[in-house]
Length: 198
Image 1 (tube, rainbow, N blue to C red):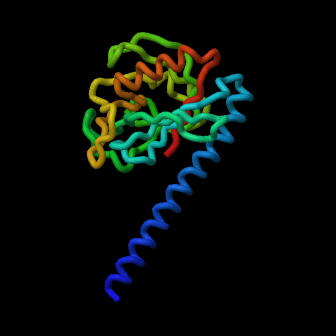
Image 2: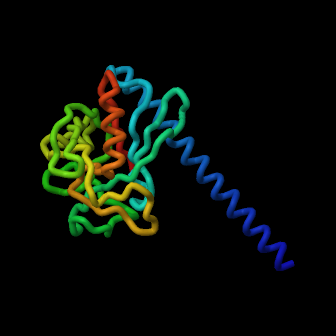
Image 3: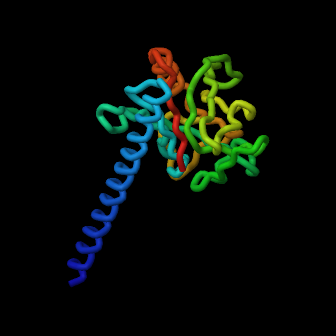
């Protein structure tokens, strides 16, 4: 009887986890449909977009390259979020980052960004991309100097249950990831959509 109950518990746990994975997949698929419409309307890259899910623990890969045609994630990267009123460089909000569009909040902002001008960064591999916020939730991105860049402190592989060091609101990736993303963005003939969700 005891072994039967244990087997039943394991089976229920597996089913629940499978259901959560399916829900997650459907959720991203829903985002991809809206993203594709947005990209076509705004004359952006229509083969893929970048999706950052800050609802995922910061110790896990949560920046995704989402292929529109395949309707699936084809690459994933580590990415930081803003520390807000916590200490810079720590991981105090690894489970639940605060979100804000306010100047000097040091928080990340959700919403759709158009990745545009490439420039020189003081961080990582010295490459940055300006992010043009297109929603009310991220409209201050340029004024807040929120850019896509790399940072030596960002790991290239998952560190869960540890978190990724938190910055001042920029989506920062590892140097290795930035080299790959930089090449990707340079090959795109049109600007690329970055959608940050939570």
